[in-house]
Image 1: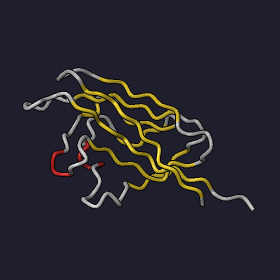
Image 2: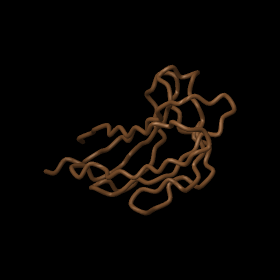
Image 3: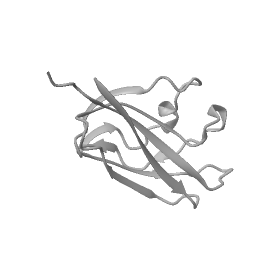
Image 4: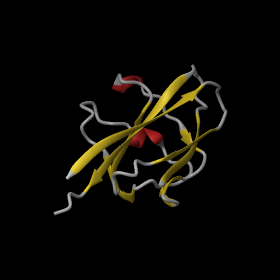
Length: 121
């Protein structure tokens, strides 16, 4: 089985502002098998952002509006993804995010997709 990570970054510059993420998945892979999200490579410094729309892949709702993004933070060794099974193959991942934290400072959020492609015999 072929695997690849697809990394999606979004700069969050202003508190209480909605940012739309709309990116196509890699057309060379047929399945999104996992996802995680973080704002800081130091696990304990991650900032939770709000999903102000559902996170959708291929127009299918994967996580609902108001989903707690902290649930997508990787565990400390960065080895465990939240497992999902959604179509890749150029499908869109879409979500609107907003940071309303009281101690806001500008930062990036990163969504990492684990893409897989079954080997053909």
